[in-house]
Image (cartoon, rainbow, N blue to C red; front, side):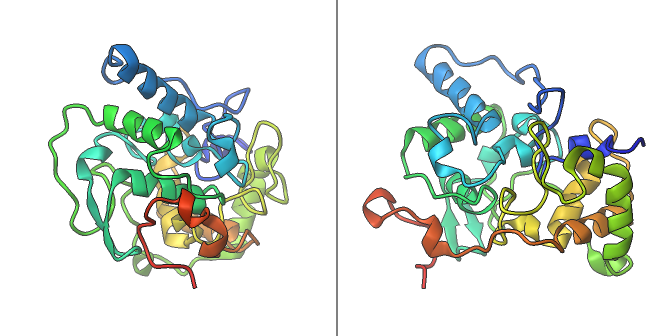
Length: 271
C-alpha cells in the first residue's frame, strides 16, 4: 500500500474520500419509493452524506464528521458501519442506556457522541429523514429485534483484544506516519478533503469508537477501501495510536437540548 492510500478510506474520522472528500455514490439497493416518502428517503440520504454541512443537520453537529464518516457509502457498505437491514433489529435492548431503544434513539444519540453535537429532537425532520433512509435500506429484511445490543445483522464484527498482542502505540505511530499522514496530517487534523482523526473536530470520548477494540474492529473491515487488508494487529496498533491523542470529553449535560425540545431521552439523566 502506498503512503496515504489506505487512510483515504478511513471511515471513522473520515468520509470515504475521493477528490472532493465525499463518500462514493452507489446504486440504490432497491428503487426509491414514489411520492413524498421517496423525497424523505432522499433527504435522509443527503443528510447522511452531508451531515456537518446541510442546513437541517448542521446545527446539531459539533465537529467535522458526517454519518458516512463511520457508515461508509452512506451506510450501503456491507460491513463498515452498514445500515443494510439495520432497521429490522429495532427496537433493541441497549446496555448503555439500560432500556429498550428505537432506531430513532440510536441515530439521535450518535449526534451527541460521534459527532460531538447536540441531540436533535425526537420527531424532528432530521430524525425522521435519517431513520426513513435507514429503514429503506432494510427493505425486505425480516424483523428480528435484538435483545442484547442495538446492532443490526451486518454490524462490524468485534475483535477480541485478548487474542492478540497488547496494543502498541509506537508501532501504530510508525504505521500511521507511513500510511496515513499524507492525507490526515502528522497531527491528525486532516484538511479540506480529509477529516480529522483526533482533536477537537473528531469524535468525542463518549463515542464507541473511542475504544481501541471498537476502532480496531472498524479498521479491520474498512480499509483500505474495497481491499480491506490490515491485519488484526495492525488495526489494533493504529487504533491505539489514534485513540492515544486528545479529543473532546463527553459530558451528557452539554449534549442534550433543553428538556422542552428533547422529547424523552432514552437513558439516565445527566448528573
